[in-house]
Image (cartoon, rainbow, N blue to C red; front, side):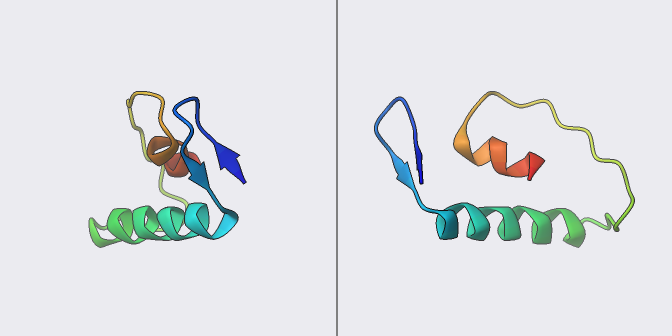
Length: 52
């Protein structure tokens, strides 16, 4: 369970689903396992999922 400073709650399944969505989006752009991806984003739960 993840709770933000704003009081939003995220379950393990919520995070897993977001990570999968982002992975699929990145793969649809042509990225493959082993590729290096660079991002510059603000801190947020959604952006944390980019690193997972």
